Each structure stands twice: as C-alpha cells, then as structure tokens.
Image: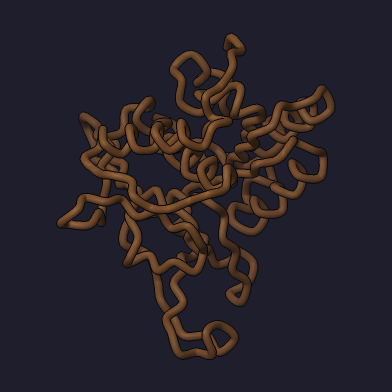
Length: 252
C-alpha cells in the first residue's frame, strides 16, 4: 500500500466518514463523541463490517431507530444490547444454506475457561440471537440484567487502541485471545466455512521495526492480525489488494 497523509487524524473528517458509511446502509449517525479515540473506535468497527463486504457477505444495519433511522453504537460495555444497533452479515452459498452473524460493539463475552469471568472486547462477531441475560449480585447489585454471550458463540473479535504500538500493548492482546478462542493458542485454526477475520488489534499509531516483528510473529503463531498505523493506512482490513496479507480463520 502506498503511504499517504490520512484524513483520520481530524475528528470532523472522521465523523464525516462514519456518517457516509452509515448512510450507505440506510442509517444515520447522531451520537456525540469528543475524543479522537472514540471516533477511531467507531471507524474501526465500520472497517470490520467492510471486511465482510469485501469477502462477499451481504451487510444489513439492524435495530436502528424507526423514526430517525439513527444507528446507535454501543459506546460502553454497560450499554444494553437491546438498545444498540448492529450489523447482520450473511454469506450465501450455491449448494448449502446461507449463514449469518452479528457484528456487535462492546458486547461482554463469558470466558471460555471460567463462567465467572467476563471480558468486553471492542468488537465481536457472534452467532445470531445468542445473547443471554442474567442477574449477578456483583453487577448493579443484582437489580438489573447483565447481558453477555458465551465464548462458544463467538466467531472472532477485535480491539482498537488509539496509541503508538508498543511490545506490551500488542502482546497483551494475546491474553484476550486465550480467554475467548483458546484453540488458536494451540495453533488450531478453524478450517471449515465460513471465512472470518482472525482476532485483530487496530492501532492508530505508526509501527516501528520491533512492533512489526512482534505482529508478524503473532500472525504466524496464533492467526492474530495487528493493524498498525491505521491513521496512515486506513484501509488495511478491507482493501481488496491487502486481503492476501490478512490472517483469516475458516474458509470461503
């Protein structure tokens, strides 16, 4: 990819890009955000949706507000999934049934190792209609629903960090992979259809030689994508020309 000055350092242009993306899917963006990190998080969510478009999925915005058409991002893990919008992505095949998945924002995941541990990656791609609710005394004093999804219903996930990449930042992502998709830690990568983006870390800052080497090592060991320099190279996850460089799990 050719390096160029990116518009994504400007919050106003980031907001315009988000609005344009949603408008292309029959929705609108009206939420308030002030920090660049918040806009970057929303932009990376859209990039994941674009990955599925590039790979032949039909994409539909769901649970948008009926009157205004507003798309409601889950700006916090405390946001209730019932009140938030999401994208449904569907892959259609000639000789077998189509499959669909929800691209969710800030959805809690129950650990694959312990029913008492929950984590909240920025983005999750999950089986449809599998979100559960429970009452836990340690959350909201047990007086409100605690929404989550079991790890078995998670296809893949991703995080976004508005930082310069560092060894610690990149390597800490491995811990999330171990909690959600531990089989990847053993080098066991799903081979059956459909195709998903491997667990991915989106970092706004430009990489250095050391962080680049770490990213390459994790990609080989655990099928982890590390998108560094997203402000300089904003199309890494979904550009057609870069698909050959991405680690995917599953097949077409």
